[in-house]
Length: 108
Image 1 (cartoon, rainbow, N blue to C red):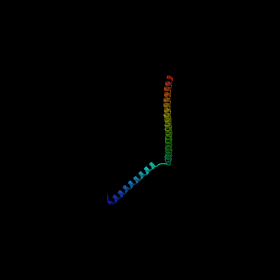
Image 2 (image 1 turned 120 degrees about the horizontal axis):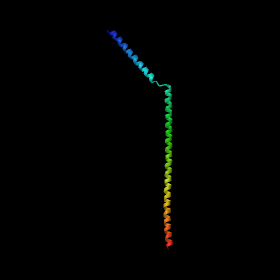
Image 3 (image 1 turned 180 degrees about the vertical axis):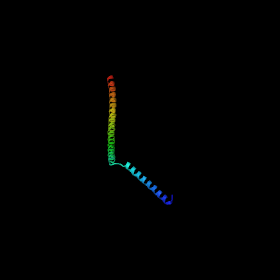
Image 4 (image 1 turned 60 degrees about the vertical axis):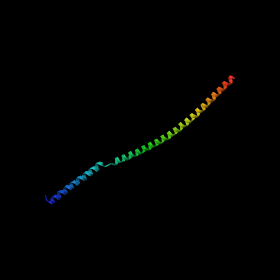
């Protein structure tokens, strides 16, 4: 094999390698191509995900407001209970004093 034949054979091998590489690249791009329907579906899924996140955020905000309201109502109820218990304790003490006074007055 002389120099000219070697150059021609090398050129053919390189050209074939280039052609195979180009074909493989084209084939992969063809197989991986995203269709318009898939893009539309992805956009729809993204929109639905965004709406679900907004709904979740609204639900969390509502629960936080509701929890604050219920905590406030519980604190008010506990304050009213303490006031009622104090009033009851005072009334019992006063009733006890009145009983002892009546007993002292009726013994004399």
